Length: 91
Image (cartoon, one colour):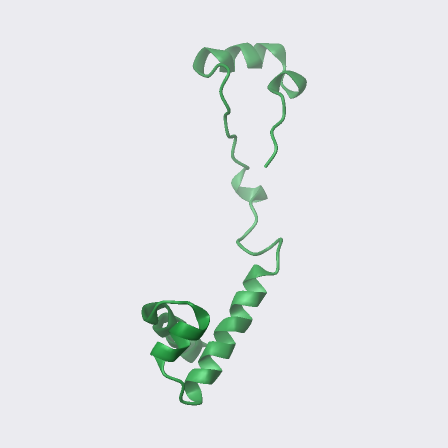
């Protein structure tokens, strides 16, 4: 994330007011709720994770144990169990 110089975008009176509270520090201004994006919305992460979860579930149905799946996918057995449960509910 890059930063923008406040002096270049804020009116002087607002900058003076902000300086009463924070001066010479970085400050994060969050997006409005209506402008926020959901996780995975701007990348392929969500689709890749879903595909991986389908793959895990299919292997589980074929008889691969939770322990082996956790070793293959570098996930804890609890995570594998959670994925299987979620996938069962979807199907």
